[in-house]
Image (tube, rainbow, N blue to C red; front, side, top):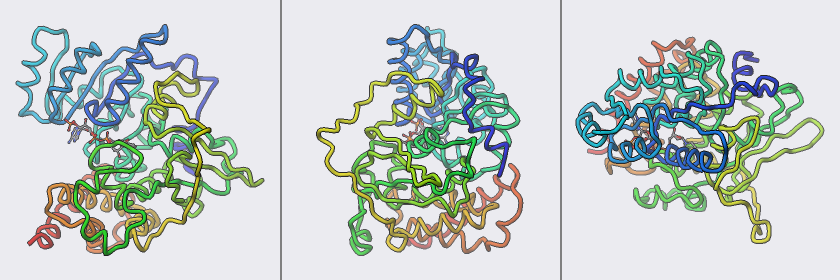
Amino acid sequence: MDLSLQSATAADPDNSSGREPRRVSVFGSTGSVGVSTLDLIEYTNKHSEKELEIVALTANTNVELLARQAITMRAQFAVVADETKYLDLKELLQGTDVAVGAGEEAMQQAAEMDADWVMAAIVGAAGLQTSLTAARRGADIAFANKECLVCAGSVFLDAMAQGGGRLLPVDSEHNAIFQVYDFDRPERITRILLTASGGPFRTWSRDQMAQVTVEQAVNHPNWSMGAKISIDSATMMNKGLELIEAARLFPTPSSDIEIIVHPQSVIHSMVEYVDGSVLAQMGTPDMRTPIASALAWPDRVASPSAKLDFHTLTDLTFEMADAEKFPALRLAREALELDGLAPTALNAANEIAVEAFLNRHLNFLDITAVTEQVLDSFGFAVCRDGISLENVLETDRDARHKAREIVAKLSC
Ligand code: NDP
């Protein structure tokens, strides 16, 4: 068992009183998770005596929303990753007290600032460097950005251990597991049951899926999310990435982590114990619930999310996940078992393939096909190498390059 991982994730109620978050930064504040986080913080500030201060907010290009958020939330620093947007952001924030930055260096500066609770909600491996910086300086990390843990697992966990902050899972499934997982007795846990909605094409055949449009794929039946994770949910690569994320976060062997389709998304995941007890966390599909859990852990804060209505809740059904229909599930399991840099290549290839699909350069079924070809081309033996930040970045770059080549061939 990786003890640094356990200490990074385990709740420590005795230590919690001095760790209530006061100063908060949100990386990816203009995205779906970022907006939910700020909504919850505004709600908390209105409904509790303790005011959460916003240190830094960041976006990639959406300066209009970033500027509005920075003004409303009285942020100290607003950063746009895309340097070409600097002057636009500066103009929008002229006459305010908000400091303005752009580009990689400013993103790092934001991560260095002394927020004690940092929401990591940038999408994709682009969120890695700022999360590492915040982790190394000891911030508690509310962790939505699963790609970071998939592509740089032990590098990120080592950074958390080095800094001594807490890793608080925000992905609804991992947050659910976190809430019911007995970190003091992991050997008493027999299975983690990672639930999946099955996405919009759960009942479709592969032939039907060959014709899927971008509009159909982004239209998730239960959750309202950003475009990339919505496509990942449709291919079920999201569940594959979550499998890897769960294996990194919880000291349970990956062979004991099972994916179960639960189309209603009411149970957000479960943990089974040796005595046959299965503990589940339930709630409406609203990210403000797991974010609130991460914000207050191990305490609780009120959240504006709708509560479950057991009078109208009729069905809670479960199905086996179908890895033939959704080969992303098999690929992710293979990458996890190979470990080393295989998950890094898997994640990078998938990011490029999803982007190509969203830009209408690739068919839906080819998203997973591209990822598989990239993994094959890497030769899995190499992926058994130990990982460092340098070889993560190199593999990420190479896998993206290879994926672009394959996409270019397929889209001819
Ligand atoms: P969105 O696409 O809605 O938002 C992504 C955020 O990241 C935006 O603020 C975006 O800025 C910013 N961003 C994008 N690219 C870059 C970049 N290169 N550099 C810096 N910032 C960047 O994503 P979601 O909120 O849906 O998801 C965020 C993360 O949370 C993902 O890892 C996802 O898997 C995870 N997650 C999301 C859930 C959800 O319900 N949405 C549920 C569970 C996990 P801009 O707006 O300017 O483009």
